[in-house]
Image (cartoon, rainbow, N blue to C red; front, side, top):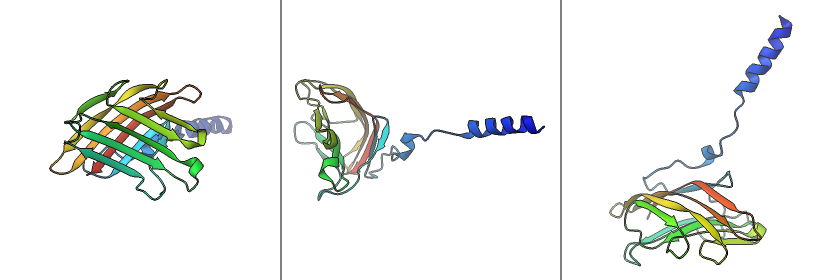
Length: 173
């Protein structure tokens, strides 16, 4: 009895172990103007943190400039300038809900700055590979709310590729 109890107990304990889900550390996908931002950056939860004198998360939307100009940006700052990270994207011609694709020569741009590696990735820079999109899930000008999701991959020669997945933002304008 003792010999079968130990393996059975070990098996039970092993099957109860779960890997932590990085997405659970992200804010929920909302459309209420909750002022949230988060994504997985190379599989790790990434949310704005710290303060370098400016708000660590901003969204601007101007429906009258270039047929609807949108800019979404967030940063992490630990107090050491060498550890500063910024994730963001921007676009013109955002007039309604829908999906907008990042591609060379378009007005839709994605970017990441990771100062610890001295790599700056901007989708429109020569030699930078970018594939991805963002989706506006709510654009309510009367309530002043814009929400959406985003995902993209950027690669630059001499730097590691970066994958941004499960991105979400919700902002009261």
